Amino acid sequence: MTNAFVLSGGASLGAAQVGMLAALSEAGVQPDLVVGTSVGAVNGAWVAAGSDPAELGAVWRSLRRDTVFPARPVGGLLGFIGTRCHLVPDSGIRRLLRDHLRFDRLEDAPVPFHVVATDLLSGCDTLLSRGDAVDAILASAAIPGVLPPVRVAGRDLMDGGVVNNTPISHAVRLGADVIWVLAAGYSCALTEQPRGALGMALHAATLVINQRLAADIKRYSRRADVRIVPPLCPIRVAPADFSQAGELIERAHSLTRDWLADGSPPQPPAVSKLAPHGHAAASSARRRTPELGPQADMDARDGMRHEQAPDLRRTVQRRRPAPPPPRPASG
Image (cartoon, rainbow, N blue to C red; front, side, top):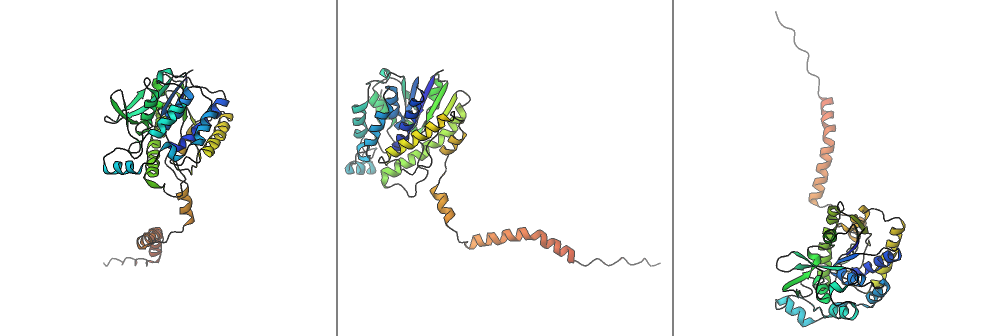
């Protein structure tokens, strides 16, 4: 049986994957191949190197937003006016990868490692299995409009999450029998909108790319044993906020450990947490008592009329006088 780990995108929410990986490692679940996209490619590279998840957790806990997305006001302005195609440079992520990545080329990873990116011109997803590891991972994580596309083998590539956020399809084609999906999830319980253009762009990206996952799970579950590690829910952390990495790691570790102890129950509950839903909006809506506007009031009265109409008809029928008896025929 071939075990595959597939890791999704999710910006700062990718810290949750560290807790999932730690729990899987403690339970003796190890991958025979790894497929990652976006931040899942960053975490996947660590797994493919055979490194301890605790070390990856230490890296995540040290991160801050400016470390990953260094602010460049002039660069942001140039991106806005169209001189550049991105808001921030990829120098922060490139430096992190250079400092911590333990292999130079994808084919040198101790565990077979594959990265999913998107061809900027064709829009097709591209599986990278050979070549410079830093460039491949950067391409997979190049969020459109936020980070610059990366040129690999003559093609401009960007975030693989645009077309294939959790690359289950590639794991199936690579021959995986058991596919462990580590989904970062999305910020389903924010009480206010993310701050700034970068925060809004990251939040929008995570909303869009996570909606494909549930459909992919249903599509490929007939072709392999797809096991969805329960994603965190609710999540009140914005995808641009790296200060809560420790909390996300601990929550995901505890949740995954309990799930494994229960025998890795099937996927429906996990899938429902990935489908569009909310928490803060629903609770605030319950707290508010809406006032009926003129149209709503008319609709309510119309509804009452429709409900009462049968009774009124019966009442009219009961009160209608009986018809007079027929006159005898003259003759």
